Amino acid sequence: SRPVPALAKEPAMPRLYPVLEAIIAAWKKQDVEGVLACVTDDIVWRNSSGYAPAIKGKAAMRTALQNMKAMIQPGSNKWRIFDYAESADRLFMEGVDEFNLTTGQHVAIPYAGSLQFRGQLVSEWREYFDGRISSSMKAGAPLTEELKEMISRPVAK
Image 1 (cartoon, rainbow, N blue to C red):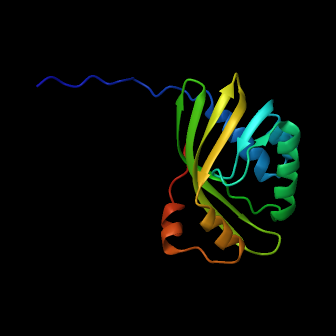
Image 2 (tube, rainbow, N blue to C red):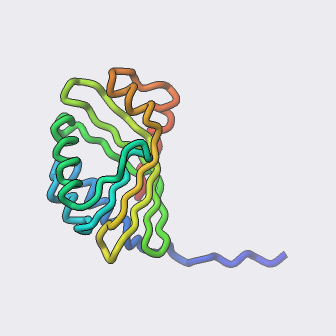
Image 3 (tube, rainbow, N blue to C red):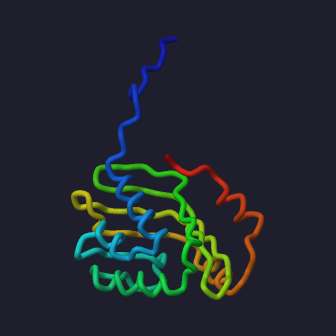
């Protein structure tokens, strides 16, 4: 049998993932303007898995982020990406959004999503997660063993 040739000698350098890393770094500092610097003026942010209308435009995203920031305890954000893949102008990701609310609840929401890029800016952001997990944790439910297992994976590099 013949050896199977390697598809690539070295993995390609990510082109889009560094933008997501910048968004995550900004959001961990609750820097709304830092997040917005990475998106287009006409951003479409589908952040509810389809149970609420998309947030359209940078001004609407600013308002949504400011509202979220007001509910999250400063310094508690542990947003992590476990896996990602790039395809043309799209970045697919899987991770966990983890933080503490100012009211004391600990929230960890596993999710998957995709970012559509126009140049080096995100023009559409889609997130998919189980809203029941989000609602129950925001109401004070503890992390289940299943969730602990899902979110204890290594972070993407």
